[in-house]
Length: 70
Image (cartoon, rainbow, N blue to C red):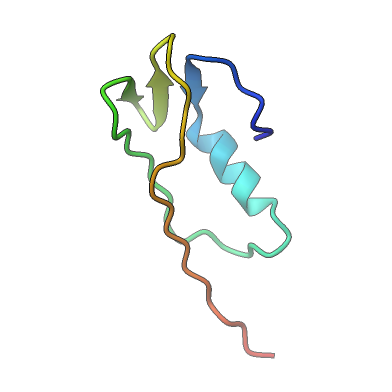
């Protein structure tokens, strides 16, 4: 995800998941969920549909890091 999105559109679960797994420090994603917290967005399947006059903002992000034993 490049951050260059227009108003409206979709937040695609699979695109977000792939972007996170491609980060160099990510080995495994245990859980990922999308929950729109605005009346300007609606959950459709596992994706979020934004109203035509809305931009996406990430809301609360929780990240758990596990230390790998070497």
